[in-house]
Image 1 (tube, helix red, strand yellow):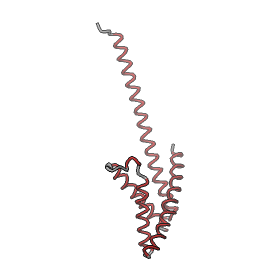
Image 2: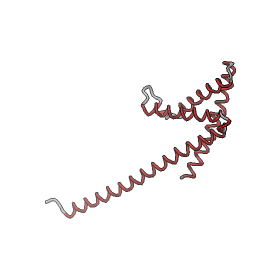
Image 3: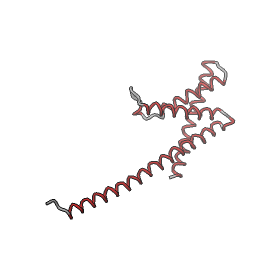
Image 4: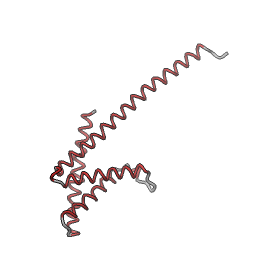
Length: 152
């Protein structure tokens, strides 16, 4: 399971970072630079912020996009925008590894999420199997008792 999580996290990290930080963020920096004629720091900041928000919105479950969003939708959006923002900061910083650093950070984040979800789900499954066996044993015992003690 860990190998599958690692492979999936690496694939997602590469694809999403190339799209969001490589293409989108780079395109936004160019666009803001032309439109605003602003210095690089301002265009980089605006580009990181906007790409982070788009990252967050595109990571929402479509069922969460309703006219009356739930608290869960707001929390998910805030979390995803924050992670998108941080990946953008890493991608813009040569000291943090640039785009390669963002890919590594994203893959590490996703691996942690995927693997911890796997552990939670499998432990719940194991618990459910134990409880199902216990319930089955209780049902069988009750049926045996009922056979041994028929109603008069």
